[in-house]
Length: 221
Image 1 (cartoon, helix red, strand yellow):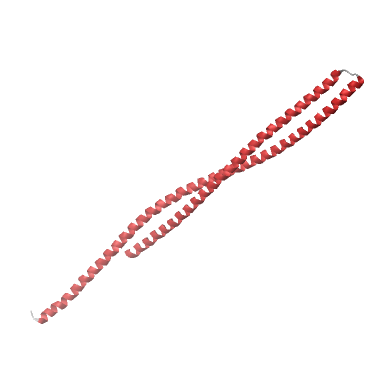
Image 2 (tube, one colour):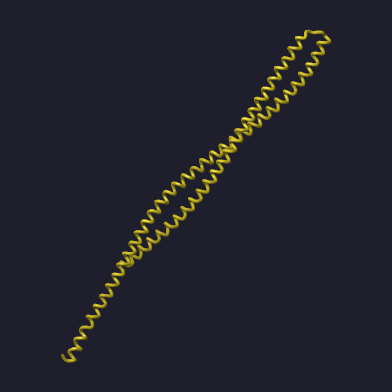
C-alpha cells in the first residue's frame, strides 16, 4: 500500500472514530442524568414518606391540643364556680357572725334584765308579802329564755364553724385547680411549640419535594 492510499484511509477513519467517542460521551452523560433522576425520585419518595408521617403527627397533635384546651376551659369553669362558692360562703359567714353577735348581745341584755327584774320582784314580795310562787314563775320564764338564747348561740356558732370549714375546703380546691391549670398551660405551651416545629419541618419538606420535582422536569426535558 502506497503512502497516498494509507493517508486517504486515515482521513476516512478519523470521522468514524470521532463519532464513536462523541456517542460514548453522550451515553455517559445520559446515564448520569438517569442516575440523577433516579436519586432525586428516591429522595422525593423518602421526603414524601416523611411528609405524610409528619402530617399525621400534626393532625394527632391538633387533636391533643384541642383536648388540652377543652380541659383548660373545664378547669376554668370549675375554678370560677369554686371562687363563687367561696364568696357565697364568706357572705353566709358574715351573716351568721352578725346573728351571733346579735344573739350574744340579746342574751346579755336578757341576763341583766332578769337579774334586775329578779331583784325588783324579790323586793316587791318582801314589801307586799305576795305569793313566792310568782317570783318562781318569773325566774323560770327568764331561765327558759336564757336557755333558748344560749342554745341559739351555740347553734349559730356551730354553723359558723361548719361554713368556715367549707370555705377552707373551697379555698384548697381553688388553689388546686389553679395549680393544675398552671401545669396544663405549660403542657399546652410545649404542645404549641412542638406543633410549630412540625409545621416548619413540613414546609421545608414540601419545598424540598417541589424543588426536586422541578429538577427532575428540567433533567427530563
